[in-house]
Length: 290
Ligand code: CO8
Image 1 (cartoon, rainbow, N blue to C red):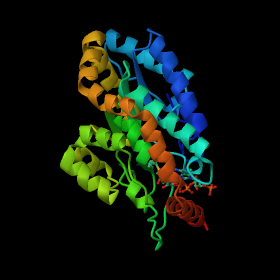
Image 2 (cartoon, rainbow, N blue to C red; image 1 turned 90 degrees about the vertical axis):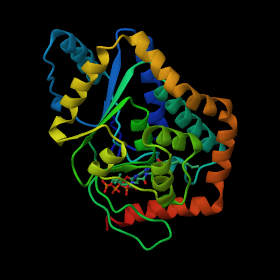
Image 3 (cartoon, rainbow, N blue to C red; image 1 turned 135 degrees about the vertical axis):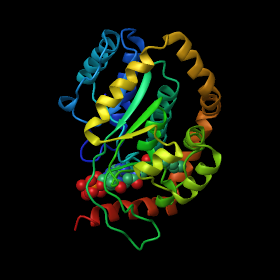
């Protein structure tokens, strides 16, 4: 599945809705067993599967790539959905963010993130809201989506950064973002990274366990396919039950308090000070072009 929401693959309400619908269709179609989430062009995709069994898996993935458009490399949640709108819109948006996370995190499919970024350049700012000094990026909501996957492969480019940088925008990662992060890189590393809004370069991301593999950019998709073949070799039923066992407690925490979480989000994001921070951040993003 390939994200395609120019210019920066931000997670708009429309994109989230399409993503959820596509995911549901794939979950219900038993001929699909796995998804590679990427932002790389399908034409660039090369199948490097040696055996007939893996080739079969590869063909499933190839046909999937050809039918659906999604990504894992993204500017994160769409700031314009969280800024200058009314509470009903914030509630609808947040419900969609929750829904996507719930579906992805406990998906029966094998999910692999092939993270090959988009993006160009960034300046810096002296405002209280820190503008990211980065080029290609997978921040915040974009990183969260990759964290729901079973395996992450990141392109080896020092300009590529990923992490949960919410504090840099003057906002706070919700508890279930935090839980997903802790489940991936552990408590101490999360505690530090979340407070500082750290964005990791590929080598650091690998070291801390945020990604499972770092490979040259032109090998990201072929590596994803080989990894997919390995995961496909495991009987689905046993793998799915194991995934469920590892992740269900985390999912249940949100399921039990979805409405409260929406209310918390709406009241937090509606605050004047938060709206001001987000507006300032968006303006700085625009200004850096000039
Ligand atoms: N949402 C909406 N629009 C965006 C976003 C975004 N996340 N990111 C960039 N844009 C817009 C820019 O404003 C710009 O608009 P315009 O063309 O109108 O000027 C356009 O996209 C292109 O942006 P850039 O010129 O910056 O493109 P570059 O290729 O130079 O850089 C980057 C790409 C690196 C992705 C850069 O745009 C960037 O850093 N964006 C911001 C990334 C970010 O901080 N995302 C975090 C979003 S918050 C989130 O995901 C979780 C929130 C949890 C909320 C919890 C509250 C309780």
